[in-house]
Image 1 (cartoon, helix red, strand yellow):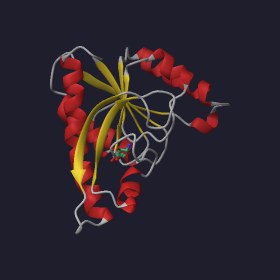
Image 2 (cartoon, protein in one colour):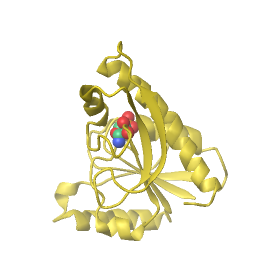
Image 3 (cartoon, rainbow, N blue to C red):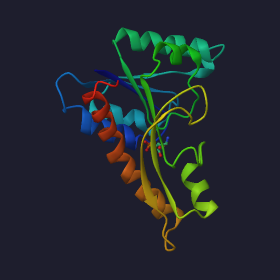
Length: 190
Ligand code: GRF
């Protein structure tokens, strides 16, 4: 399995995935980071971990399909067969979706279909729900939609602040994502 990770931000999930998958099995390797924000901290992290990276400057392309065609080329060059979104702040378009049907996963910091979008943790916190969590799902053309693979719940306690909740959710994310990817590979699902 040759894996690529797409990310736009801090990259804590990127680090967790690399740390837990890179030396797991000799036939599984994280070959590439694709990132779309030049200053994203995830780039620095990929360099520290020795994972090759490609920066895609979306403003350079006429539209998303042209940017994704360039991404596809980088993916094909390295024979990537699985894509993991980890804080990638864009909707994946048909160019990549069609090429990697059933082979693109995403992690979302809420119990989908509740609280999709860019602020899943905060939206759940503000709504006053007592339970939220983390979801791993296959992507489709929507925002945080597509078949759900795994979920883990996180309780929101009366003493929680947004910061303490964020902390707990991220800790769960860093365990759940690598574990689910391992299970899917072991079972031959991806
Ligand atoms: C995570 O909370 C992930 O669930 C969401 O974006 C965040 C990315 O964080 N999709 P990081 O860049 O992995 O630290």
